[in-house]
Length: 163
View (tube, rainbow, N blue to C red):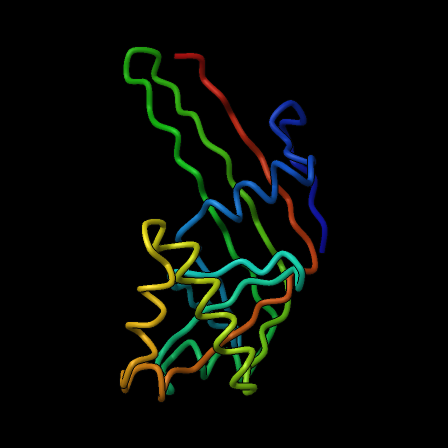
């Protein structure tokens, strides 16, 4: 399913700009559906450029997992909010809509790699220390569920308000 961006002057098509939004983000809103029922959830993520994928971690049970098992197709949104200018009644932003398929990651090496990517993306000061802390006897790490959204398409738009 492909839709055009109505305001062509705001469309983001440059692969480097798209990658910049994905790589600098911390959270995305993930949209799922099963049996004609929608479900959205906000999750932190890791971006794997080489795999063209987002990774999410969660507990081993829950509503999103039931939805994914029923229908692995997903839509996600990442928003970079550059601020509202109250005097101009205007907003600067960049946003993306990503579509793809989610799968459950079972391979422990891939889970480690995804967690490391997530820590690097979210913990900018000392990611190695953060990763070591997570690995060291943490029950969460032993029971987590890792999800991988392989990106099949991306659309984006942006508006830059001069300050």
